[in-house]
Image (cartoon, rainbow, N blue to C red):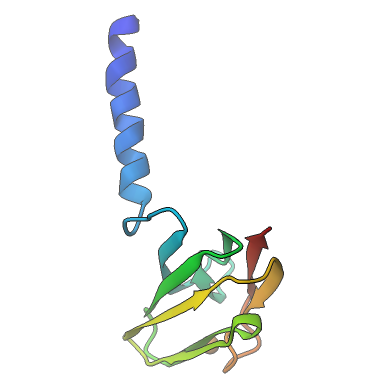
Amino acid sequence: MIRHARPLVTLLAAAALGAAPLAVQAGEISLTVVNVVSPQDVKIWAPTSVVARKGDSVTFRLVNKHADEHGYEIAAFGVKQVVAGDKSATVTFTADKAGIFPIKCHLHPAHVAGQLLVLE
Ligand SMILES: [Cu+2]
């Protein structure tokens, strides 16, 4: 039984590494956010919720998988980006205040909204 422990741990580590979209350094969040259709059949930016620490430099690569354009807005940090159909765009900002801030598509308010949680 013990012989099997190492391969299992290695597999789990590989899975964890594979899930990391981009290299992340201390004080930086770099994440790919993709507009997809949820199991509830609603267009969403996934992941919908992101956690940062106050002072983090945050970069989101926004990938729009749909043919029509969609917006990505975090008003509290001046982020307001339109991503054309089947295109990507990048937004960068500093999470310089703590709190819970809504993320939405400012073009289509019916989207399921997300949130940015910035910890003190
Ligand atoms: Cu939209």
